Length: 293
Ligand code: AMP
Image (cartoon, rainbow, N blue to C red; front, side, top):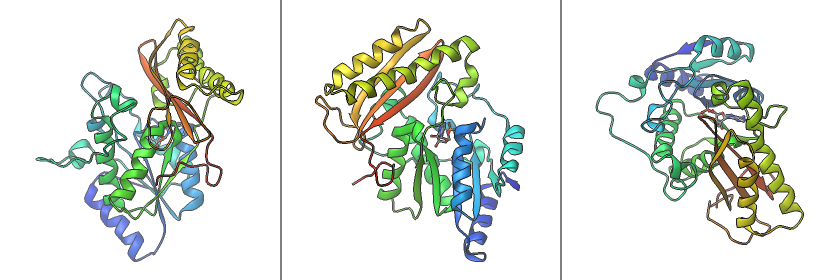
């Protein structure tokens, strides 16, 4: 396994793999502090592709002022040893200056899917995400890129981006990996005390209650939102940022629910840590993945 820090080098290595060796490349973009969620993506990339590249880059442009860019967990030594065990071929770990060189001025914005939910609470977040993913896809030109359903809105935005800008990369979205308690695994769980970890399980419990209520016939989006919100707020350490029930493909708000795929998305603070999670009702069967028209 080789660790690459330079964009030029990553670009020329990937070009060689494509042209001279004619091998399929899978890219797993991450911000590091790797956990089972990331590793599930790496495992699938390893299964599907001949060459696996994992990028580790805490992307400054997707963090807002006052967010946790500075304190975001970084541990490339540990990440490297995990990825060695998974037989990854390359780690791409550039510095911010390497990605955003002096005079950097170009941003990518996926309109219509970026302003609500996470984008509402974190203005500019998805502009940063779409921009860095564009740079990674252009640098590496992978056949496949792997993302998690844990970041449902991000997954939709990336599918839209790849389609709109005609990238020759297939996007693969994989299910959320959870702790036994149901808590979605996240690098930010490292911020939680053991008591907060236990409390954080309430987010998944609330989503599960909503799923059950829907199965039992509840069709009011508003009532499902209230059910999720009130379940989370029974936990004294938790404070809801938003709970939204939307069309899982367009993110449009719904009043009455029908049989289309529906996304219930939550952001909540547990103590000072902001966590997100979601569930999809009526997931499409063919691929288990979201589709865009
Ligand atoms: P991050 O390092 O948080 O930017 O995440 C990198 C990728 O891993 C993104 O595509 C995430 O959606 C995905 N991911 C993070 N946590 C999980 C999880 N618990 N299960 C599945 N995928 C995840």
